[in-house]
Length: 241
Image 1 (cartoon, rainbow, N blue to C red):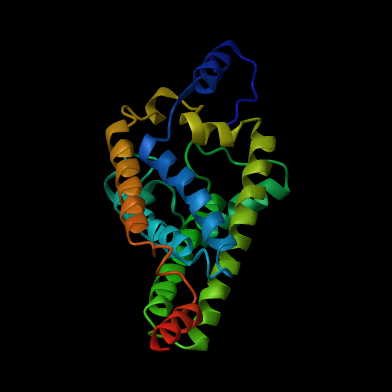
Image 2: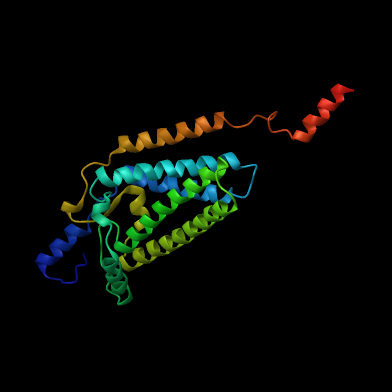
């Protein structure tokens, strides 16, 4: 909500709205900031056989995080729930037109365009993870590998658009949205604030991710297992002599 009047009553309302209050709970923020390095690491390690375990581990981590986010989108705090921010094409069009005309709509939670990007990234993550799992278990051919790569590249494009959108919205609303995703606070009236940050759930998320990474590390091949097969055959031939 934008306050344009200078009357005493509305000025008081504006000061109440301008106060930064807790909007994003800790699980939403931890999900967001875990997805960032996981996707970056998985994307950058995709072409390297040496970093295959890292690539697979980060991909599975993303799938698990999305699974949690889907659940939290149903039972989480008000601004984390999909029902509070997912809107139809008409709302997205109206929001984009408002930006074009210089009258951007202010949303305490995700705006309609941002919500569209979030839904796209969640869906693409599942597509990437499913196709990657199939390839890792030799259940697909070249066509599935192309699907996997195309989904990853599309995800990168959506991430880029999302970042541009965040920067643009931050500038137009004079509001640091990146900071809000760190401390969870945005300018909002009291009724829009969430009561609890749910830090215990966020802590469990971090423990679960670190535990999964530890298990994956335990399955990493040893130096002996990683030796080239040719060298092992050569050694076996020496014994035969």
